[in-house]
Amino acid sequence: MEATTKSLIFFHFLILLLLLSPSFNLVLASSKKLPSVNTKSHHYHRSLRRLDALKASIASPLPPPSSPPPEGGSDPRIYLVTSYGADPTGQVDSTEALLAAMADAVNGSNYKGYMMMQGITNVGGAQINLQGGNYLISRPLRLPVTGVGNLQIHGGTIRASDTFPSDGYLIDLSPTNDKTSSSSPYNYEYITFKDLLLDSNFKGGGISVINSLRIGIDNCYITHFTTNGILVQSGHETYIRNTFIGQHITAGGDKGEREFSGTGITLQGNDNAVTDVVIFSGAIGIMVTGQANIISGVHCYNKASGFGGTGIYLRLPSLTQTRIVNSYMDYTSIVAEDPFQLHISSTFFLGDANIVLKSIKGVVSGINIVDNIFSGSNSGVEIVHLDQSKGGFENVEQVFVDRNVAKGMNMKSTIGRVSLQGNGTSSWVVDFNEVLLFPNLIKHVQYSLSIAAGDGFPGHVLRNVSDNRVVIETSEAVTGNLYVEVDQGR
Ligand SMILES: *[C@@H]1O[C@H](CO)[C@@H](O)[C@H](O)[C@H]1NC(C)=O
Ligand SMILES: *[C@@H]1O[C@H](CO)[C@@H](O)[C@H](O)[C@H]1NC(C)=O
Ligand SMILES: *[C@@H]1O[C@H](CO)[C@@H](O)[C@H](O)[C@H]1NC(C)=O
Image (cartoon, rainbow, N blue to C red):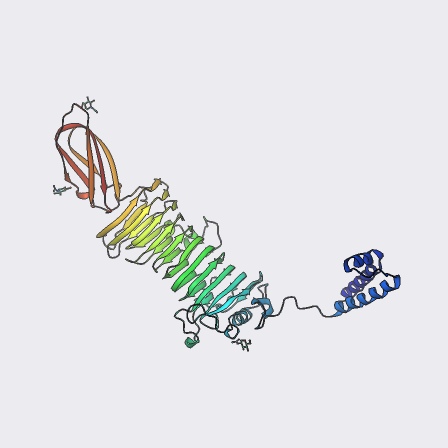
């Protein structure tokens, strides 16, 4: 206290000196365009008045460090959580403060009549600003009303306390219990979570998006979850962008990797996108059980498949409709159950990571696995592997696995091409089992027999394609080349 008073007095003294100094007056005169009759006493009196005003302003209590929460009317709708008593140091529980800021941000009485989807009130782009703080919470953050849209929560860290429910999500877009509060078929629309670090403290998950529309999760970092980093359930178009997700904070090759659990992202809805996302630890990177989702630019190194992990798991037997492009599967594989309409391309598979097609009811149809790069350790891992432990694939239709490149892994394809030299050969047998994906399936064969001029015109015929072995016979023993192409896909 004493020190503050002293320094205040010193400060006043300094200002007095400044005001009385001729150079200061000169500055004032030029900037304020004062009348030219400038006597010394004039200056002195004016300076004294200014000094009084200054003193008064210094003596009056300082304004609070942050502006008060905006009220209705014309105030900008930026809700600073510290204004509600949230503790940005993360020491004191801030659950009530954050909930209060959220309640104000979506208070419907401020936004009458401006709708988005039917029954969704547009809150105008209201922002809940975490002000770069680190907040401890003991209950999931849920909006107090259902049926609002155009809201942002951004700019800080939210961490679960030790008493946080183990099945909860830090941010939970569930409907409120009051089912009458909205007439919308969806809970929320266009809510954006941006620049957030969400630390679930090994209690539950990060963000859950339930039956909502056009939700953005952008530049977030989600960690220490035990269930899901992000859960999307029904609804449409949750876009997860530029985000980092991992159960444990590691940078690969972690000693505890075998024990990683939890799922980075679970998509139980349709039409979502996961783009430019890294999943750096967790048992499963992305679990998809909804249709028409796109995964692009994703790097999964969550838990090596060799330790029981999966990069991307497509568990939608016969309704896959998933595109995985431009991604990087780093020691973790893609598993698809009874894939139906699946596209995987321009993806890099490292460390024996591969694609496993798992038969449940024997359906595999409408598959493009093309233009990918595979790199392995010469352990005999197939780039595309069929898991037929629950029964064989029976209905193979429109399956195109081709134009991939592999090093240190076994190439698999639905197209086989071989050229064979014969010398006094009349029965030519070409075995395609090494490269063909499906056993005993050749739908189409094309071959050419090349014989040097002067060696006559022998007759030749295709005899057999069983067990992926093509048998061609010639009417006499010939010396020449045979070119064969087979196709399983069409
Ligand atoms: C909404 O704001 C109004 C003032 O604008 C206030 O009277 C009312 O209590 C608030 N409602 C809720 C649910 O916070
Ligand atoms: C075919 O085999 C004979 C002997 O068996 C050999 O003399 C000849 O060079 C061979 N021709 C080719 C094209 O390999
Ligand atoms: C084709 O070869 C298989 C053995 O690979 C044999 O069982 C089958 O009878 C052959 N089919 C014909 C038409 O010769």
